[in-house]
Picture 1: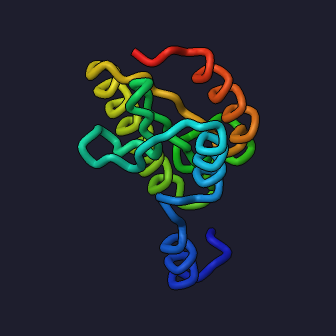
Picture 2 (picture 1 turned 90 degrees about the horizontal axis):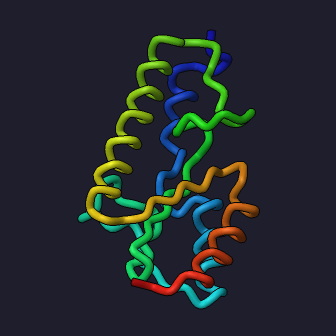
Length: 135
């Protein structure tokens, strides 16, 4: 059973952002400070990636652990309303995989940064991109 009323839960869920989240803003800041330029949320690409590094043919998704099913403490599924949440989160996982596969078929490199690993993953990506010569 949910500890919030339906109205309160609706209010909480409607405040969850899909763009310009704190983890995404952090990644963008680090990339920009390292001289890497990018585009945001390109709607013409499958899944509208959070960050698009055209020069490197690379897209970055900054995923929330809960919403995208990461295997960490933040990615645990709720204990209440199981049918709803399992269907919702499984659908998210299927959609993500379809979008990632479509991007790969288009020639893009797909990078996923999880919210719980945002700092360490971003540093690794910057180092890798700086060593890589754009195509």
